[in-house]
Image 1: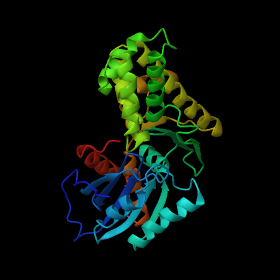
Image 2: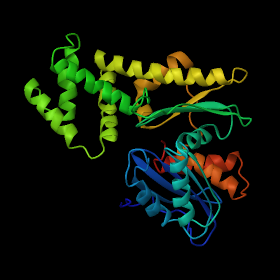
Image 3: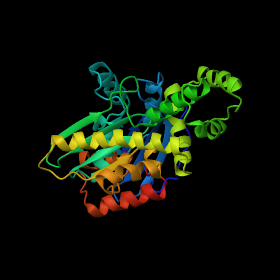
Length: 332
């Protein structure tokens, strides 16, 4: 599968100085970032999603990115969706990396890597809501726990996919008259989807839309942005859906806190769904202001790779990497 062109121009010359690299592999995109010893940002590349549970071409995506690693890469860290969900897939993911990269590397789940980035190794609970949803908490002393992350069939509450599916369920209930209370949702939602507003035509177009999707889960998750925009415009049914999503994500935080009752766990967030201001504010009502992530998810991988390479990583280095990633627009 093709990898898109770099999203930032190289700042270092990776073929002439040591560097480390990280790969953040999620359901809708896979990101490779390279950083030099001084914290300067090198090549950044994007590929398609690489979650083996819903992306048949996940191996091609990883292999394409791995082939583009600089020859001076001293260590590599990967956070991959689906890692260790099953032993077979975890072994396959490790083999793909090991066959393409001869240096030292480590692999963890994408949410563990995001948590490492958010708190730079200190205690906290990271709630990730993108295509799916999951939380990862650490007490800062080696204790870790995963909450959620059960997939779209019987989990992922509060995720983009969950919001999109709830919105579609509300739409179909409006189409056939099972819902008589939320008519205000119909016209703006179908207009944003590009569907006709006449109900019979809308139903037919909706089924055609879904039947032609190449990646149904990612496409349904993308509808969460429409719901969020409508909620922020004050549309009550959309606002209610976002509040329900926030409630599910709050339950993730509360479950994590019960695992570490003696430790104060600030919360932070990652994933595209949290770009929604209404979602962040709804969670903050119950759990206070979130801690801004010190590093985005791929930054957590860079931090792990730097430590794996034996580099002297201090707060100043972390800050330089944070600024470089932020300047490149890599904030989630």
